[in-house]
Amino acid sequence: MRPEEIEKKSFEIIHNELAEMGIELDPEKDAVIRRAIHTTADFEYAESLVFSENAVRAARDLLAGGADIVTDTGMALSGINKKRLAAYGGSVRCYMSCEDVAREAAERGVTRASVSMEHAASDIAASGRRTIFAVGNAPTALITLRAMYDEGRFRPDFIIGVPVGFVNVVESKELIIDTDIPYIVNRGRKGGSNVAAAIVNALLYGIDPAR
Picture 1 (cartoon, rainbow, N blue to C red):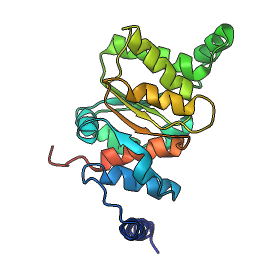
Picture 2: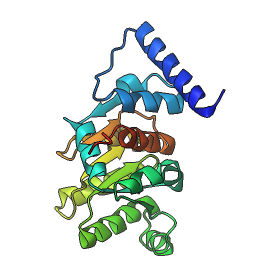
Picture 3: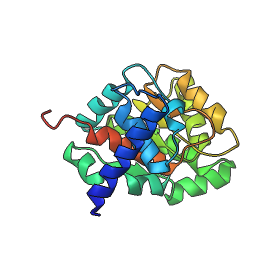
């Protein structure tokens, strides 16, 4: 089978199995949830992915308007369709491998993810670029974004919050849900860089080409 045929068949299987479970997805959220399931083979995403009001529309409006993306891992950066993103004028960046981020994190005794969010916020404030944060690994990235929001230092335009793990993961996601920042978050321990990239791609692929 050709790659596109495999993907098509996979989505047909997902559609059929959701129907067998009696799960009917909200049409607006459908593409995002199905691609998360496609990436993980985990149907729990049909229930655990939560969205702020009109989140999909808001994210697609940002992307269609040329918004950039900041990730917390190189893996998420690699998985995002950069050609499609660039077609709308956007780019994606990850600060985790920056030498100054690593040095500052070591000096302060905090995670690189935390410092990378601070550096991203500083660059965004200087450039004025609209930006979506796609966090798939580090709960401290979400915690730092919430802290800057609470302090009035920085308000992200949109957050995709799907870090995976056991320490502070569940709590960090709830910190984002408990704001007025538009979001797509996966409640619970599950997530990952692949899921963050899949959500971004689902949003990109669903933009009306007539815009």
